[in-house]
Amino acid sequence: MNDPSIPAFIEVADVALRVYFLSPASEPQLTIPGEVHEVIRGLKVSKAPGPNAIPKRELKHLPKRADSLLTCIFNAVLYTHHFPQTRKHARVISILKSGKDPALPSSYSPISLLDTIGNLFEKIILARILHVVNQRGLMLDEQFGFRPRQSTSLLLTRLVERITRNFSEKRLTSAVFLDVANAFDTVWIDGLLYKLTLLNVPSYIVHTISFYLRDWTFEASFQTDTSSRRGMRVGVAQGIDLRYPLQSVCQRHATTLAPRRLGPLRGRHGHHSHIPQADADCPLPGVIPQRLSTVVE
Image (cartoon, rainbow, N blue to C red; front, side):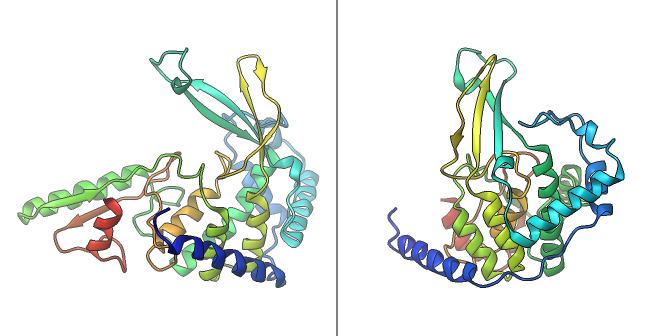
């Protein structure tokens, strides 16, 4: 790193988090059987099960008693901020890309299959994060992924409308599209948590996701062979839904929270952000065009 301020910031974030986690967490917003039942109803049965081999279709046929038991488990996690280590495991399979040479490793797309019960809890905590984010306006209006009543089609419609309007007014339209490779594979978890503390996200959420995002393990499967279990030393597991809104929140405040770096504007699985810009428009609140130009460079 050429920026001498980066190591200093790492130390600041580390000390701040250690002090932060010494304080008791706030009272959690607990779940109820009705919420758990709705989350189960929303599961996509077409997706493959995770390492525990529990099909999502089977969960939809569980009795109400099971909803109550899962509610007790999830509330215990929210209270203790402890997520079972056995549920933080991913099975990585490789899917051959269309028209690619099967002899080349780069021809395959890795897909992480996560624990089904763990995925249910993730959706419970995700609902609480999105409630805080939407209530406080912590996310960009241009964020279209994983948001209710937002879609890629609406994004394209807005872009076409902006271009058409500028044409009619004889104005030019410029746009910046960034695609950051491996954005989540190398995410700095402590930096992410530190930014959440600066944004005053409820501390029970920060405590919970801190434990949830760390110490994941994985095994890789290819055809009939499976590797031994390994630990993830950096980043977060592919397929974790929490990473998209968390990254988007940090992106929204990238210019106001150190270190001052813009996060990825587009990732995988529907994480789309779009910044159309007419001549005199500023693309992000609080971001001057010169700074955006520097980031792009």
